[in-house]
Length: 462
Ligand SMILES: Cc1cc2nc3c(=O)[nH]c(=O)nc-3n(C[C@H](O)[C@H](O)[C@H](O)COP(=O)(O)OP(=O)(O)OC[C@H]3O[C@@H](n4cnc5c(N)ncnc54)[C@H](O)[C@@H]3O)c2cc1C
Image 1 (cartoon, rainbow, N blue to C red):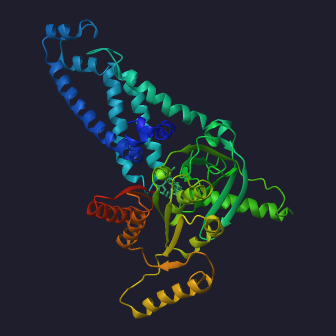
Image 2 (image 1 turned 180 degrees about the vertical axis):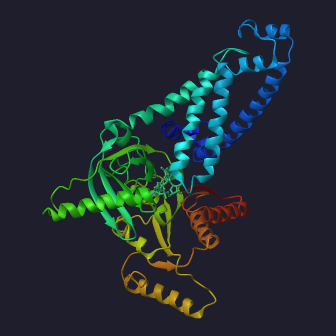
Image 3 (image 1 turned 135 degrees about the horizontal axis):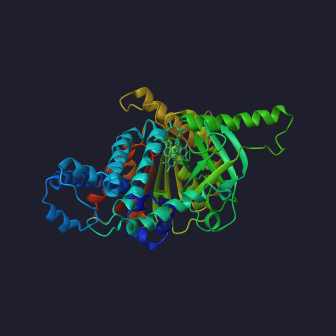
């Protein structure tokens, strides 16, 4: 139950050839599945012991001594005194506390999406439960205790990184922060020296961020938008809830305060302290294993893809073709990365990339003649002088309206990949579940139709 969420250890394993054997993309799902099995076993175990207590209360004294020896001391003859004796045993006290931990923490899992902090705080009761589990059998009443031997390694792998992130070594210096349209904060941090950030960082990875001025306890995951070749570490935070809004306001306030105090743009700004735990492995970093890749980002789900694209420009490796799709609902989002995407486009001398943007809030209806004409007018204008009518400025990438038709898109990806002589393609998606289902379904269908070609799909959902 603990091993799949020992993120640093999983990140290390993911960097070895074990990634071809173990599905590291589903570690959280594995943790949840083991959690369900664990709860079922705990409840069955508890029911069995309730029967034991009833049997013990009415059992023959000789049978009790035969089973326990003198481990329980003198066994009283009355039923109530015997039950009382049992409830003084370490195994029963810890057992009851463990059941309480489960009964409080498990229902809170349902609140993970809506009240994350409540879920997260109560989830720590399960760590208390695992510590109680180590003590549970130490009375050696029925069998020699052994849980500690099973738990010691996962405890070390889990607690050491959590302890280290609280130390000064996780602090990183902010070198630049920018507020972008569409409630997005970009921060650049000085890249620390050392093995982790110099040798072990890959495009597509994420890290846990803590801003002590906002909350000392909260650590939130954010994907790197910088590439391993950059000498800084960059993140983009979209404001969606209380923590991100407070961080946004803190950085915005800092900027204004410095300006009012008479600093100009070149003066060094005293940014708030930021702590970082990472880098941590994620599914998008598997892109290197394929000659042809499809990168799909929805909204802020573009962040891992930006890191991958930036890295591909520097170091394409064995990648021959990369199809990048970015779907956004809010037009402001298109202003998050314009220069980065244009730089990538300009640097793409070997024509690896195909970059497509979709504005999904503008619905496209293929029965509406006006919309069809508009679509062709937008395309013609862009072809003529790179003018994007949606953005109202020149841009390398034309903005298309509506949602991509994944059957159509993946069919053309497949044809192009086959023309280049490749038999497989990796699809990496970061976006909502519905979109992931649509892409997964289309890729599965196309793979089943053609025994000579296979799509490999992996997804991340924020
Ligand atoms: C691997 C990963 C990478 C991410 N990368 C980015 C990114 O590059 N840019 C970006 O803008 N957002 C990213 N997110 C989402 C970001 O972590 C959440 O938006 C942020 O934690 C919201 O916190 P909040 O308190 O402001 O909002 P809340 O309203 O509290 O939460 C909004 C949503 O975020 C989830 N969430 C909240 N706190 C946490 C937490 N500590 N850990 C995990 N999930 C949490 C909640 O379940 C909820 O669904 C990523 C998430 C994950 C899991």
